[in-house]
Length: 297
Image (cartoon, rainbow, N blue to C red):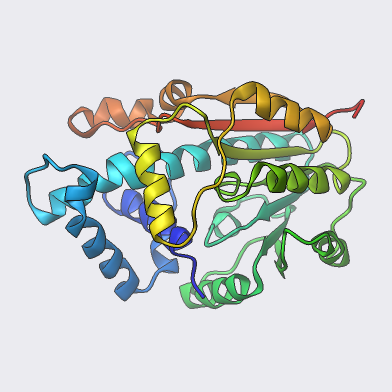
């Protein structure tokens, strides 16, 4: 069964790419991962919900959709994608040859990746992996590098065995992307997952993720309400010190961390300079973190 949050995130990337010349994050394949019916249905459902997002809004249905995408759906998705893929690029440049996308959803990195020597492992529920592979086939595009699609349950320790069986080398540096995951796990579950990833990663390996901060804004509140309505409630929030301690326990040190203001300056600046009338900002209440496996951990 499709994950509604994964579909909406893909729609946000697609809409942003289609409707902008200057982009915070470019994903030309996101639209191709959706059927025309899905794209139209999400567009209609979102524009019809404008009173939920902005009760005082007045405008056309298309203007309503643009407002919702720019102020609710896209900012967090674009910011975390830009943050993570910049970090992946840096990791590859210093010799990392393995990237693991945890709970990959409909992420299209493997279709956009330009590093042919890279090996990518995509992990998610079996039904999601099967659906994703079907959608990728329908795009008519093939990844330029080796990709292993692994159906598994990340809450069970057996996912590591599945990863190793597909060629993952725990003795070589890896990069793990965990975008959009921490929101839907309890603190105990998140800590267990990070610890499990650490046990499969050698020193110098990195992980990248976004997470909900204890202090959030209206956008974060609405995101929680939407997730709950879709049957995927968000379970936890963290302060920086709490996340730092959790990572340290698993042997990771925070290498880079951004809050909303820092992410807006880093990734939205050019877009906002050219689109002052419809500027976007990274959402308050979200942290963006890059952590590296401690050489002493």
